[in-house]
Amino acid sequence: MLDGVSLDQLRTFIAAADEGSFSAAGRRLRRAQSVVSQTLANLEGQLRVKLFDRSGHLPVLTDQGRALLADARAVAGDVDLLKARAKSLAGGLEPELSLAVDIMFPDTNFTNSVAAFQREFPGTLLRFDMESSAVIEPVLSGRCAIGIVGSWALAPPQLAHEPLLTISAHTVVAAQHPLASHRGKIPLTTLAEHVHITHIDFSDISQGLLSLKFPKVWRLSHLGAKLAFLRAGFGFGGMPLHAIEADLASGALVEITTDDAPPGGRMIEMWAVYRTDSPPGPAGRWFIERLKQSSAAQQIRPRLQAGPVAATAARRQPSRRLAAAKRKRGR
Image (tube, rainbow, N blue to C red; front, side, top):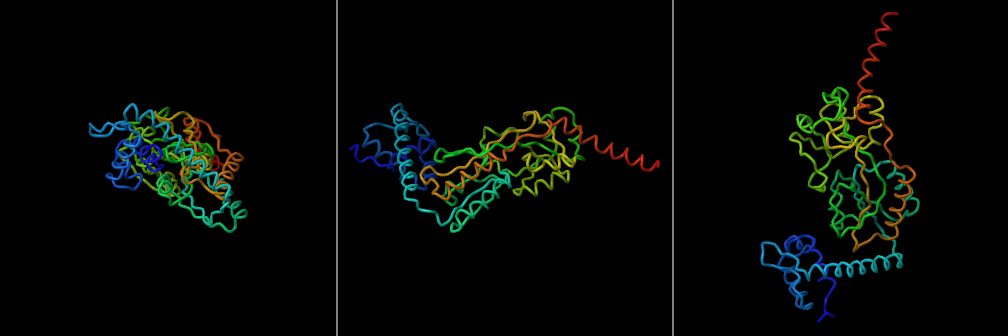
């Protein structure tokens, strides 16, 4: 009977254990709940082991189920590795490479990699989805072969991820915004009195990374629009350092420090992700490695003073300009 155990049954077992319910596993696998239940019942019959306790509202892994889950993952992982190696050995160059890219990823690194890719693989069509945060779903659904995402995103177990670079994100306001004159760390209750400008859909990110959901939220999926709203003084928001260095240096934007953020901004890892059961081919593999090389050469690091110091420096600029104007009038 054990010879009849299939890879499909093992993947269904893994999905049900990961999702915590047969209905959620069905949604993940795009199958009806009844099919998932029947598949698991058949697997239990073949193994002669009860994998789930179904007496409660939700199925719970039994001790035997927990013990066999690790073996099921190992078997499925070995098969995925076999498929990846076979695909690489076959050398089948993808006619098209589709990527979902989080808008927080540095433009320079990405465009340099795209230019190099076009020279290396002129016959492979590149297609992009530039997303504000929803990068995982296009990869899971198979619409995109590779995703480039920040470490705030939900990372399902069926996705492999490889680190690309680390960026620094800072909370900023316009120099004329009331929060710009605040000294020291700003309490979250004070922030809640102002508009939070964000580009992230909070349903796309890990709940462990959420702090306070502010009552006044404006969501702009375009990073350029978000930056324009911040410059206009409409509210506060987080931005990657590489996108706001010029604004901070000129004093147009001021960095603020909040109770829930470390001094100098948050460090965010950016990853390349793809389905473990459908790894990238030669062109996709080359593109990931090129992103790594580009990122290593231009690693984004914090190069500015901490929030309160930067804010103080920016606040002094109007005084210096006023003094210069007075001297000019006195001549």
